[in-house]
Length: 331
Length: 282
Image 1 (cartoon, each protein chain N blue to C red):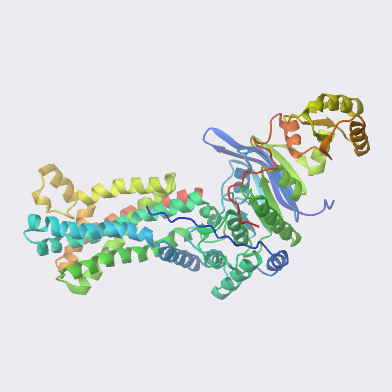
Image 2: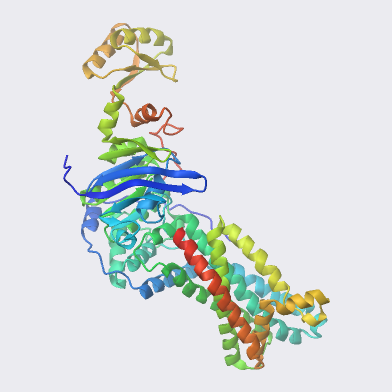
């Protein structure tokens, strides 16, 4: 790992209070240039407040931070000149067309009229929005709005980009498109600070990760390190016949040790850190006449990491199925 | 408020990775936009909104148009002896009402930006801080002009002939718009304090509606019971209406105009810094 790379974000002891509640409670962050750094936590953990402080939208009550070398309070304008923010709400103007939105941002960033128009056209084309360019954004789907939002953030390519829950509410297809765009940005050299409550998203994109809960960073590391800190992986098995679960539990218990019965009456999970032993256990199940519908062997999910770190789940629903608000299109 | 039904656009091919990479690689940072250029860009945005969301302007124009027609023909004979005489009396008043109603939307628009997250983007840009607020004033002027012109044109069609001619009308319109600038800061402050655009609209009209009716827009204050007459006489809207009538007829008093300008300046002095501070705080 290139630990020599300069730090794009360096925050120490950030604190922010809203009335009675302390939203951010002493957050330290160190983000290397050129990386994707994930800030992972449930709703209300303080992720958005942290990002808003770093993007100069809020002043911290205590602590300090430098973004790309500039102090976020003393040199806020220099920070703004080098970063862009894609907020939790798709922050584009619904009453304008997609093209007008991009021209607006281009003009505000100092492009001349012709330059802003040309840049808008280029981005609309690149983000698959050329056909919808002349339509009002209020008629866009969630996925299109998100892409326009990200396009607006790179009208002038930022050195650092804040992305606050960029795929919240998107269907899986749109989510994958957004992920691809983020990977392209990173390949182009942009540093990204990504806030998310989707564990899979952090796993897919982030090089480094801070887990945040109740305004505090409770763990830090690569996704791999965090998983390793929980210890073992797991073998998940689903049976053809739920009546055979007791037999399967006995076999897996003998082969692997601790077995956990899942809420699904046909499924069970056993601790398993070694792929060979896992394969043997599955073979033993088959020999004993238990019918297997499917099985998988994996590292613990980040949800399990979160549970292990905080004693409570990262969110109510299963993380792999973010709530889909709108379907983008039939295939 | 008018809402437009939402139709989904069904075809969107997604992003083209190679083109995205090329787009990311291809820009150098331009020199920072000047304060003036940023403000004008926001003015342009305001005008695009007039174009794309004409309903908003229509909502506030239709009511005054209805008032002109209704009051002139229903009550004109009873109140002023003839519909023609009453039209002369209420037209400058309804001009004031029409433009003042439009100022509420300055607050509604700002609150909409806030709740939709657009303000966050603007605040994260390296621009002159008050540019979004100053720029929206420019867009607002266009809406004030349209709202005012509609009423004047309607009046002329119905037979209104102001004594001071075109010059008087232009002067009156300019005075009303100047006062509206001052008043609009009250609503932008509300726009930043209240939670939803609807709350801003309701609270705004709850204030402006009674103030407009308890003025001399519709009736001569001399016909009112004592305490009410006293209030109507000091109501700044009455003074603005008096000044506008005076300008349109060529009989304006410098005193009235002075009070109107001073009120506008006072409102601006109090509420413009308040709006700017609240906006910065976000």
